[in-house]
Image (cartoon, rainbow, N blue to C red; front, side, top):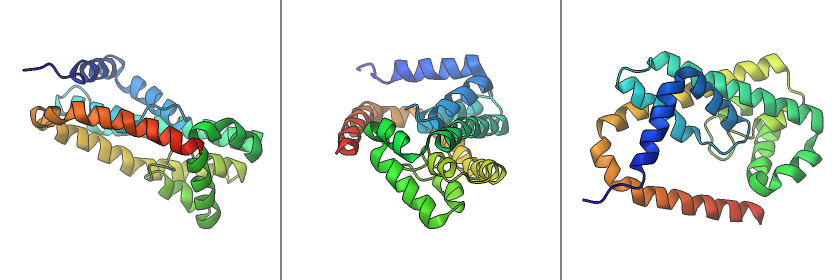
Length: 195
């Protein structure tokens, strides 16, 4: 039987999250929300694995994810409020061009509620803070809607990690092809965003 290519990476991430525990989850989720490409879809399910094993508390894991989302989102909000749209779009269009335009369109159409709903939309969730900052949305409303929108996302991801942990042997058979598909998908996404 061949050794999974993904298994050592999974073990490393679980070990790091276990060692760093809640502060590491906050840090990684803050980086993700600050446009650093560390997907929450990887971080929070691993916290869920540790919840399943009794090494983390469910609600503290969710709260850590939400707190990280808020910290990173506030940083991006402030960048939008201080810098303005043109410089932001010039600097970030290489990686986030279409997502930035989608977030701005969503914010223009839905107003402040876009901050809440944008937290669960994959192409928008990490960049919705920019148009909120650009429009100088009320900071208290932004904070409240960011927290409220981040809760269901983090709840679902931690819970999915708990469920996946219970079925790890079955899932691990599909992880190598899935990992390859994710890498190829990221390459295609970046190429698509550049056009």
